[in-house]
Length: 179
Image (cartoon, helix red, strand yellow):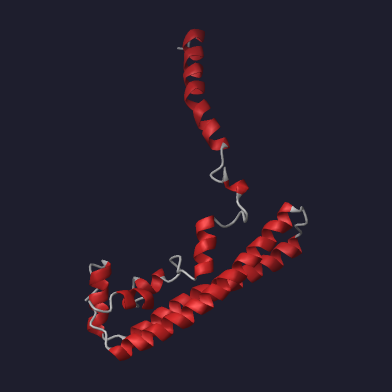
């Protein structure tokens, strides 16, 4: 039995009615509105955090695997019963990491600004993009390493019981595979 023209027309109309909003939604980019950013690849919050030397989740691998962050440990000094020597050591670790992170953050912002200008001024070439993105990648790696290594240093300063308590206080105590 062949479909009747009226039934085909009705099915086609229904298909178009359902598909039209999907096609419209697909055309609008998730980036809409970001064209007004000073640096297209970075939000204002990211720029502020980079300038301030904040972690931006870069040390999550350490944080969630029993390598506490020095800033958070210092914030919990009473609950963790830190000794004065531990406080001094952790403060030094944090200060070194923080200074390095601020410097690297400023450099990363400068490189992202240069990359943005390259495209905004229509001067992008494969070689120029490769050079800038290689530098950005290097800076991102150094920034992440500075945060991760601060966690490594903090773990060496703390006693196992303090690390276990830290994990409890931060909500990580129920991590799978934990003894």
